[in-house]
Length: 351
Image 1 (spheres, one colour):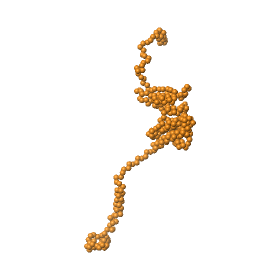
Image 2 (image 1 turned 90 degrees about the vertical axis):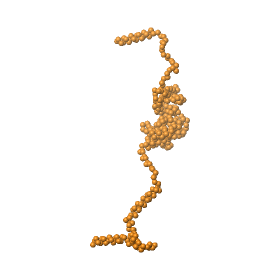
Image 3 (image 1 turned 60 degrees about the vertical axis):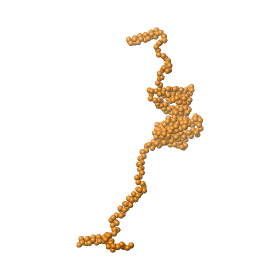
Image 4 (image 1 turned 120 degrees about the vertical axis):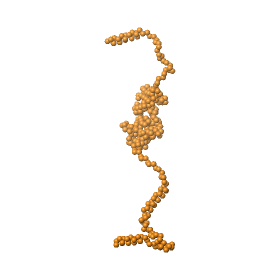
């Protein structure tokens, strides 16, 4: 109760002061406005702009480094324009770099590709491509890097494209079936390409057709009217675009299969011969001759053809004279004497 009485007494005093206060200019207050040169600039992280989306205004802000982050899904009742918010990151010592804006811009583009089939179905393809700003030209190194890393295109059921899907794309690329057979694959292919996941070089018209048919789900007649092109030219450009996308997907699939195979064994290093071929053949022939000589020209086999008798017996047979040409000289064989000696020794032992 004492506290409540104190609060009521304080309120009465404040009220009495307001009643008795005299209104007069106060002195010693800081100025409300100062010169811009005297005020320290604020440290800003970004600049933002909001406007009714048109092609000209979007191009202007895009050239000045602004990125779209929000697009209202309902058009204005007055102007029929969609409200767009774009940001431009500024260099700030409190923030390391300006790359913090890119993840937000990337997320916006991903959601925008999904909304093109609904709220933004009637948006001109040129304006939609300006918002997505896809890269249409790729180098061979970028394409090969993507092939090696693999291109995963996910269907509505959460599974990647299978062999049957690639077979349908191949059939349409070879002009064997109508484009209606692959319409279910178009949203995934168009979204993957326009978001930079399929690095295949396409023309601006091919990208516009891919966006109109794949993301906005427009009819062929609507695309013809929007692009001011005849139907046969639209289908021809569309077929060329799908052929390039299929070639990239097939190359990525083949690279994945090749990576799953076991690595081939390294071939042994071949060193040149130290000896030339002719010398090697001569050495081999000499070795064969030596082998045949040692096999067939044995001493025990040649001994049966040896001439018996010594020099004395030969002189005795010739009478110390040279034999006539073609004459015969008979020398007593040592084999007969050896045989007779052997026989005599055998008889003595027996007796």
